[in-house]
Length: 289
Image (cartoon, rainbow, N blue to C red):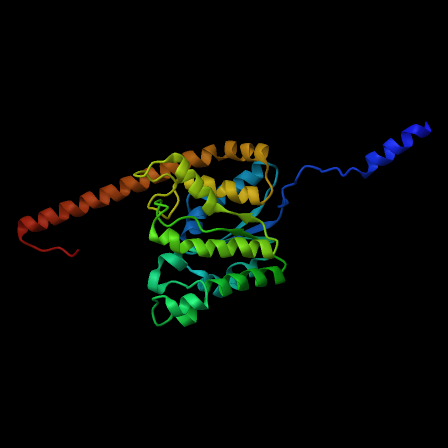
């Protein structure tokens, strides 16, 4: 070897090489999805975000097992109470945590952010038993990590698509806490709230539900955006996300068909009720509301 090449080779060896980031979830691992009605719907409908996450991973060669753990109406204290039963006992390697909307949206029955909010807010007489959001969420993360489960933090989405709503203003410090906690504990973060705000602003359709069916619960686009955020937090890059999105098409079609059937059934039930009321009125009989 020529001696004048040695310094060049030595310098090259000192230059760090950065490999492609890898998807953190591996085939055969379980992912628990802890949350409220948004997460329950994320599993319960064909194109829900939980199903999209699992399908997106499979499209990239990773067969993960979902552990659905969403219950409608649940807040941080209730999720903490059932953490062992619904998540830890299932022995997952991963856990996504989606919590915060109900803590704010339930108003007097909600969960205050911290002790200061407990004292200054207007809550019912059971608020002390519910604890505080900061304590509950921290306990969920600590207990999960102690059990060897890797948490993925999801910021809470939106409460009404009017980003200037009172509820979204109240939700902001809850999400700020989640971001800080994720940074402090070095957790993967899917900042869904920021993603939702950016999408709603970009669409600029004040009178149209862009991502939700009712201002809170996801439509197809909302579920897709949630899934994208979770998959990004799990390490998928742009090309891998494209594979995931291509795999979602059959689920989206099934989701649209299911929504149509539900709407038709609702319309039929309303029409039948109206007909019964009209018939009863003609006979002079009152019907229960």
